Length: 173
Image (cartoon, rainbow, N blue to C red; front, side, top):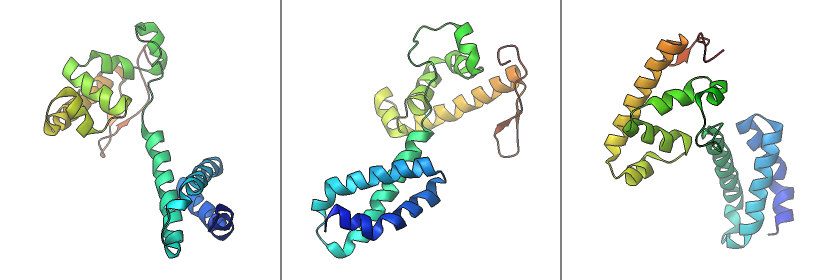
């Protein structure tokens, strides 16, 4: 089967499947295009044509997952500025300052996990500590960060444990 035949057979169904998951036409178009690019590049690897539909939709699911994974990774707004001062960082609330103020062993774990997007297992290998230790440091870091937000910005923690409210400090406004 050729890519054009796959397009004609499954294209519309696949597009609406992706759109249903990402809920944005522009994003759906990008994911759809990436999916068909992979289908085109790897169509020769498909051994059983009766499994084509499942294979096509698995590629779509993987591309959707890749999109959400990419979107969930926090990008440091001033990643290009290594030695920035507090004044230039104030535009981004207190988040970066609070991370910088964490003790080194907590800061490293937070930066590697949430800012650089490493998995916890990778962080454990990089820092040469156990996975349990990484998880404990992340938990303690989050507790410290929540406490700092409450003290500085007058945020509150709701019943689900999430920070809520509006900034109420000189650095945030």
